[in-house]
Figure 1 (cartoon, rainbow, N blue to C red):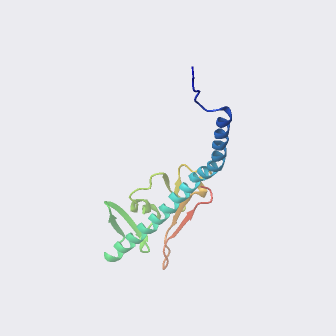
Figure 2: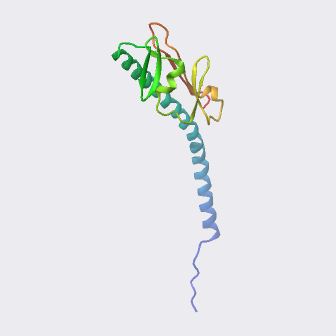
Figure 3: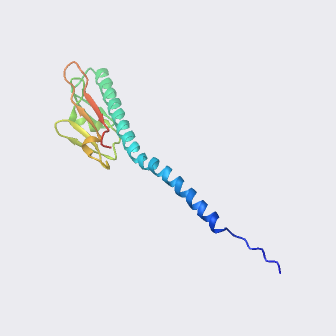
Length: 143
């Protein structure tokens, strides 16, 4: 009776487990830092959206003869020195989900799921002063 035994030896299994462990040790740190990079990318994207919305609102206001308010996508935008003011900058954006809007001294869009401090993972918008555009700041140090 010739019975062939098939399967893996203990040494083969140990070698495979060691290789998987090494791959996991190398890959895990890279995947762990992807969350931080994703949060930074989202904040940078929102900063670009705020800049774009500000420019669109200014263009529309100039085309209409610089009125005190304009309407964008059914939302009323109050203009100040030719740009949207802090209280209505959120109305210029179609979607800022994942962020919490707060209008205090400056308008802030804070990342809701920031692992660090939400005060260092946000976009700020300060009203335009006469002769200069609004100050839009992207902060990603705490994402």
